[in-house]
Image 1 (cartoon, rainbow, N blue to C red):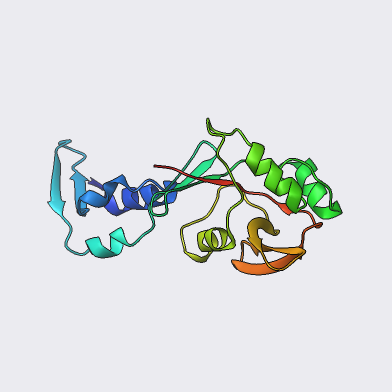
Image 2: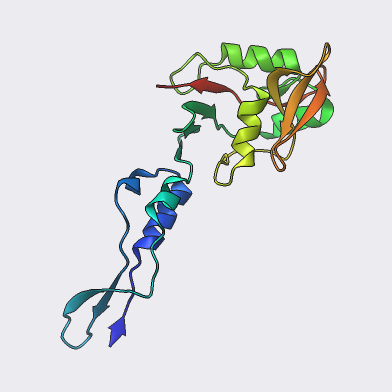
Length: 189
């Protein structure tokens, strides 16, 4: 007898990983499907041993969609640029130059203000609160990121602006002439 177990929770896990939580409206059910090899007949029965998470717990998971170079946060109504970073940009970060999605504060601000990406032209630099919040909560991660500081639009003092370091979501005061990575954001309806 060949037995295979199908868990809807695996589908839920894949759905969470892909970011699109359209399944929240219904409560998932655990089922076990068995096939008898000799007769080929199938039968389905509920599997009481598998616990299904409480609907309130499932709804507390941030609903986000990562697709085609953008990251949409349904909860905050923010769309984030999630484009790949290239070798030239990584080199610019290490040598304090302005190239593409890396540069000093003025370059970062101009880059976002002039960006036409994914059919939109209303991009901007995120505030320190917006960007750090994206890295503070589990599950809110970008497909394309770097282990370096990212500019925000929030001034720290006369010559410095805050940057956010993704691994710890900490806010750092950085000189506006330093080069850091850039990730633009926009609001959506």
